Length: 627
Image (cartoon, rainbow, N blue to C red; front, side, top):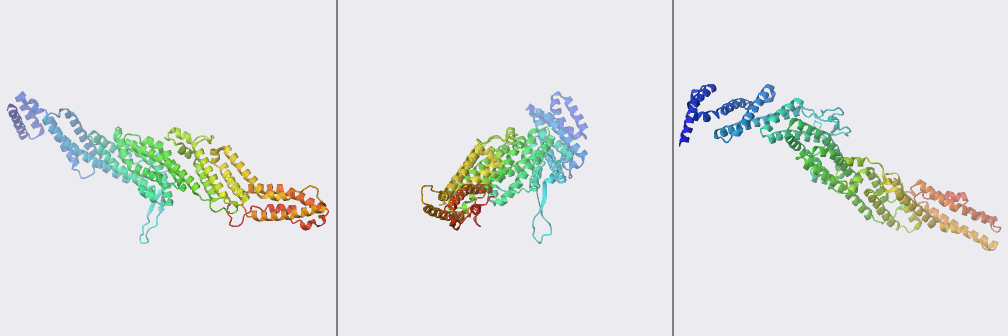
């Protein structure tokens, strides 16, 4: 009861003081008199009075700013006064918070918190307005550090429009990028300073998330616009997977340019801006950067992921390699900018997609193997020329091996492309015949040779079979020798397969010309002159028949390689011409046939050689030419 009476008395004293006091000073004097009247009332009458008085003063000051209908930061003096009032309010709350258990102090602090909240909302609005107005006035192509303008990475491409539309629509797309050593001055230095001052107050008041959100919304729009200007469309993974391949090839080219500009220019510039606006508040800066970059990063990564899980048709290898290499080369940037607590998931996702792209590349090679296995042995290539599967496979893997270092990484399954991976990419041309990629290529060669051997069985003529295998083996060896394949498969592999070409050469010679050469052999056994003459004439007649038949047939056959063609012709002429010359000489020297020998000799030695050098010219439409 005594305590209740004391509270009532204090309430009456406050009422009297407020009624009599026409100013804050008079009210304070009256309250001081009451407190001197009885020491029991001194603390209760005076403890909360300075807090209330200060809050009233701050409320008047801050309310003037809160009710302003204009942008406060359009006037530097006004903005400074607003920040000063906020600083005072924060200081008061900080000073009185330890006494929040006191009921009257707690009530006042609640009022202070309400006022602070209003002030923070207004600061957030001012922050947003500053960001928007500054972004509207900033040229996207401005930057620091010399080099090309960011505008140099854009170009305009006319798009067809309806005839009734007088305006020309322009779609900006990216130029080839050669210089990434720039940073965008996203906002003027003065604006950055103003934003930092607002951010300091909002963070101090515990409104860092609201400040970060206001910042992120504006800068996120800037990033999205920048990617759009680089020609990058917002495509879902499903849309990417359903695109026609020629369309997807174009999109991949745009993506490679966009992801490089994003990771090397746009994101570093945004990281720098975050650090300047939220200087001294690392966690808020990290959160803001994540919120700004997450959408654009996910857009870029989703595209790469869609490529990784799309069709693994062999013709897609080279563009998938482009995406793989782009992500690999940018992993240091991901590591640098996306390793804090908020962004680490984005970095991990980039790494996972990079690995999935490696799996896709290995899957494409598996599909190539299946393509070779499934290629049927139905129709023989006319003239024993190059089979289309040989030309396709060799040109394919020869082109693939231009990316040998990348494919080495893919098949060695390197886990993280760190600094050591960079050294690996720049390594020397050491012996690679035992590498995983070399094993893969040797296996493809083995599959191709097995397929060709099966196809060769279609030829009923063993000589033509040898020509077919000789042609294809020679093509394989030549493609290996003058490309990165030679480094992978090694000199031993090349020597072994060059020897196979020689073996087929021998097989051809034996199959085609052994019977012809056998006819020219002269039996030195005792025989009457008349019998010898008859035998020589019969042999010559048989030789002429065999020789003409072979020349007629083999003139339509094909040897694609000019050097190999000359070697074969010289080999035939070198073995056949001496035997034929000797045979003709014996025939002419025979007494019984010498006077009439000329009527039986259809070919001179020169004619014989001329016919031999007409072999392997091929007939029209026979195909098998070298490419």
